[in-house]
Amino acid sequence: MSITVNHDDKSNTVTISLMGSFDFSLFNDFRAAYTDLDKTFDRYIIDMSSVEYLDSAALGMLLSMRNAIPAEQEIDLKGANAFIKNILMISRFDKRFNII
Image 1 (cartoon, rainbow, N blue to C red):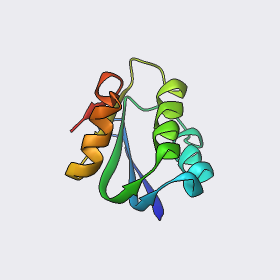
Image 2 (cartoon, rainbow, N blue to C red):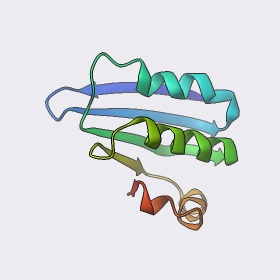
Image 3 (tube, helix red, strand yellow):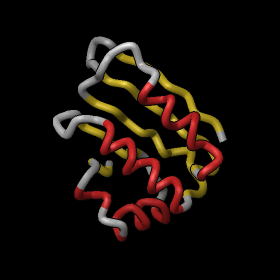
Image 4 (tube, one colour):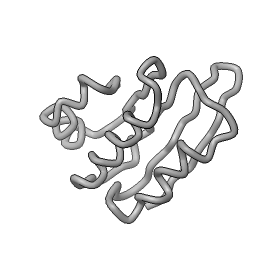
């Protein structure tokens, strides 16, 4: 699993791209992806298009991110496959995140 972080200063957006399995092994790297930034962004996009698997720890990490970032800043969960999107919907993540 790997994580890449890209900033777009024009749109004040940061994109965190995840690849492979999104699980507890990424705890420190995922947290650093949104806390070690030089500034605050208006929108955070979690690109899940290359995620093949996620576990309950990943759900917890997403909730920790949501709690760490002010509510007026958007977090989009983008590109999840049908299986992962179903897990997100069953877990009611659509109430806290934009699932696109």
